[in-house]
Image (tube, rainbow, N blue to C red; front, side):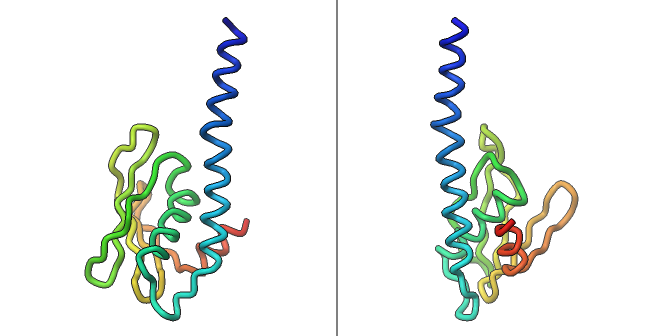
Length: 120
């Protein structure tokens, strides 16, 4: 019984966390390629939102696809294993700046600041 439980834990770790780590690395590599001088398109906003979500909000959950609204890409978030609805991430269409209202107040970050965080 103990061996079966340990194998289940190992399988779960390999099936969930290893692909997540690879996805994070890929997302951060894509983030480095974004050049905001021509504005931010939907795909770039999604990459920014995923990197911000993983580095600043939670390692568990996900952001939805960006929706364009009044000069921003609005990205709804889902937090935790249950995917509970969280506060949206706003990505400025012109320069990629991020705004998010978290538990401790409003977080504002430039695209450059997010790129610097992702390199650590």
